[in-house]
View 1 (spheres, rainbow, N blue to C red):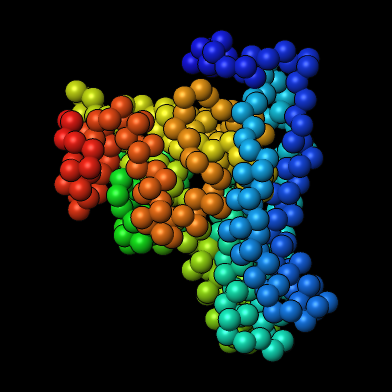
View 2 (tube, rainbow, N blue to C red):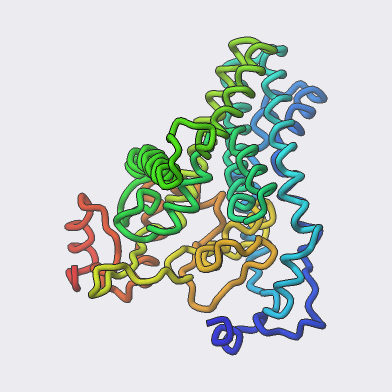
Length: 395
């Protein structure tokens, strides 16, 4: 498949001797991005203006989508002959490691701040949601590290997932979502016409249940109890309890409330990502009862430069699902992939307004299915609506 794509698409198969990763040092933005709420605290201290508590929210929901529009997309790819060198680079490997202490530092500093400074309710909420956004992206850092085979990487993934109390992602995503994606079996795949609010009610509990079941089965095969310390869900959960207990003991109950609010909004960031990444897409069931093998076309892709630089290339989601262990610097674009109209921050915001999101995405999903509603996952409550709107072809 790589050879076919390389023949059809400039960038894959390019002359390795001429290849230079022009974004090499810009990937540092993914490391620095979680510190933006702390920059906001500095601006509050320097100016006295409470609006800076929401600096991250302004940047995430307004500035980054604007930058995506201004700088556009980067469809360039590393040549296949350079992938091994990129994967072996200590520089690229180091950046996700460095991001882990930044998440911890931001969480601790902001918890201290809310306990020691006078803030009104709106300022408190703005800061908590800001930290929730960046710690939601801690799940992205854990995502990058958790797909690797090195034991150190996998423990770093558990460590960073503990910041936002979402340690079961380590099991659920790798062993559940990647197996079931774009099928009715996957609670982390959204249906056409399903709002993010309805999706969250099955995605959040469904992912937790699947993670626990998978871990229980794994431990049973090796003769161990699911309640042992070998449980890879319990391990990061213990880290979360230690962190939150220590910060509450140090800074008081207001810090605990802050931690819980940011945790919930951090979970919402993952729900938002899951919601947009496979919206409506469906792998077809084969005559043997199995679903077709997942391909890059079963994920929505985004090549927007600004948002990819702060997300470790998460938005090249199509290649990630085709090659889960491939690192962020090596992910590729392919021709004719289903593409999001903007990067994740803009899509997360549009998802909060279901009619807006459907206006942006429904016709794209229908085009992906060549106009055949039967090739899409449609929320049952919306099936008749789409039949009236688009016709009943194979529905």
